[in-house]
Image 1 (cartoon, helix red, strand yellow):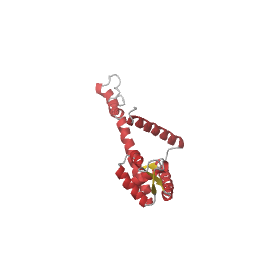
Image 2 (image 1 turned 90 degrees about the horizontal axis):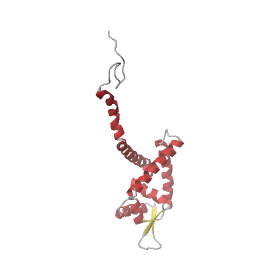
Image 3 (image 1 turned 120 degrees about the vertical axis):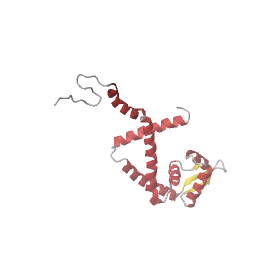
Image 4 (image 1 turned 60 degrees about the vertical axis):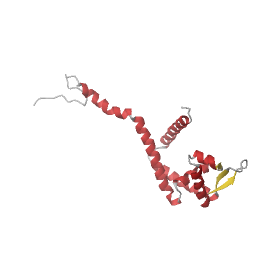
Length: 180
């Protein structure tokens, strides 16, 4: 039985030059992944964001809070007393859509509207005590969810992830404002 030299993919047998396509085959197979890394990263960020919202919705179901409601309440928890039209702008909602949403939150006793002291036409939106209590419950569930979705990441990895995402957000804000 004749002896043959063992070769790895892309390497020539002893004494013979590699075929022109053989050496290029392995890098070519890897190249599409390298060339599309930014596209894959974009899909990954989109998928993670979408899945996180979906999972958060599931965590909030026991509190009977819809996605649009928890988004308004969460924003008010950080910026209580916003002018309603400003709130619509930062949440990227139409004024009428936000008005209906605030109507429902007000009817549920979670927010209250008040006149702006300097402009009586403007309405400010405030969390009610019931809304503030709901935010506390949402934070407990949010923390539980975060612990589950970050399972396997130590404290340093979590801080690194937050810093990297913060930089990406900063870059996106600069681009959206025409600075980038």
